[in-house]
Image 1 (cartoon, rainbow, N blue to C red):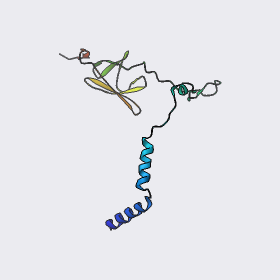
Image 2: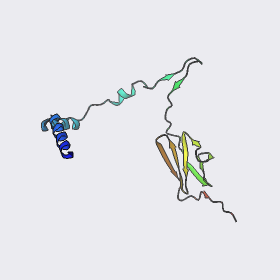
Image 3: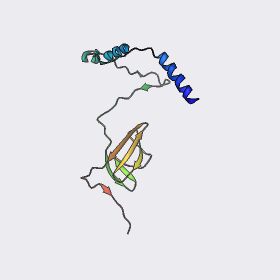
Image 4: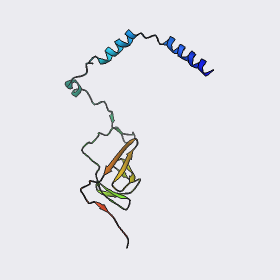
Length: 135
């Protein structure tokens, strides 16, 4: 029964596939052709496609933030399950520049913002692991 269904489905698929080898070769040639794009002057003269609405106090304001590539997240030290990131000590589930601290390990941390994950590690040459031991 399974073999019959398989054979019938293969025959049906082959009947509906009406592409010849020549048509497939033409498609591949079109893919390999160099496409003409925009030159740099045209791109620089285009308007910003993002919308910025600013109106009365009773109306909501919608502003799309710009990415700031200059700002970096830096891990400076680890102590007792907390991490010193940028300018402060952070615990698990606290936020740093839009990222949530999810894991604190012996040599690094894991930050998450939606589907974006960042892993920060301490530098090997520095001695910035603080251990507190009891007597």
